[in-house]
View 1 (cartoon, rainbow, N blue to C red):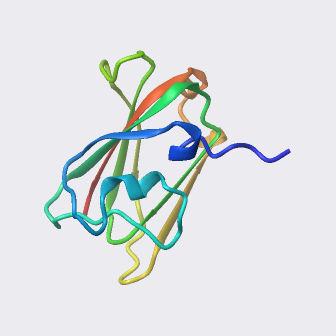
View 2: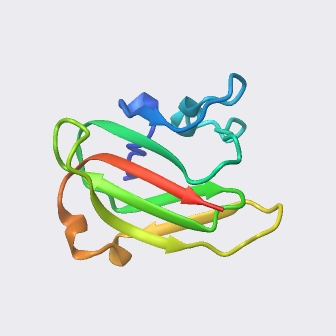
Length: 127
């Protein structure tokens, strides 16, 4: 049985904050499930976005697709409201000039606290 992609708008996920927005490439593209759409930023760093799930979820794998990201930082909250974030994962990514960075973070690489139910993710990145 294939696991659901809980980070899609069709599964109830919502982008509730983004530090930049472009009319042609809005933050909602992050969770639309379409490989042809994307979120673009102003180029200033750090950039951040917050994804809120419609229920508590257990995350077994994260897939982050990006360009020109040097450091990725994830914070999580288990509260019903997007408050009380705690640092969860910080990772330096391999620089790939002009190439898609396809970063998979698997369950066994998560810190021990990953077994908790997650309600909101806060992602920040720098170039």
